[in-house]
Image (cartoon, rainbow, N blue to C red):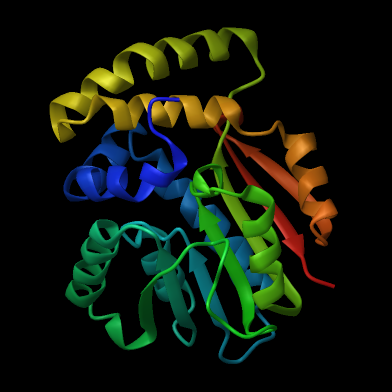
Length: 237
């Protein structure tokens, strides 16, 4: 792989200024609806909690963080990421939207969350699990910091199973996406890495088994947009 795991933070620092623009352009804004669906599931999961405490892992530029804050006006949210560049864009966005009082940002790896056990009512990671240096350790850390009965939501890109859709998907991801990424951000390798990281991500049954092996219960998943994206949901017992 052209971009090694230890260079992930540097890569995201480089593309942070254009990350939102490219995300929405490359997905035709569908990524917004994927996040909204995950946040609706979160809202339902914490509906009995008066003032939920939420963790947004690999928060990037805080798109998911903002949606959580808007959907759960009484929630307190901690957002973590390894990229200072992405965090800075996220902080500016949150301040501009006047949500800063309820959101705290920290530079932290998912594999080592500086936090006590049993703190959060729900945790979410949107399009970030495939970037974990140690996927299982990251999942176990999120389990550790969740309260008993707390919910984990994972939103992740996926290769579609339909052969015709997968052919168009591969054509787009392998050829067009790096060119558009280079034109807008100046970094084609980052968008080649995107395609490679999605291709390397476990298939749904394998990832659900991984969640269970890490200690999660009631594991389920939902395919969105012909399988281009999947939402995984699990609980801490």
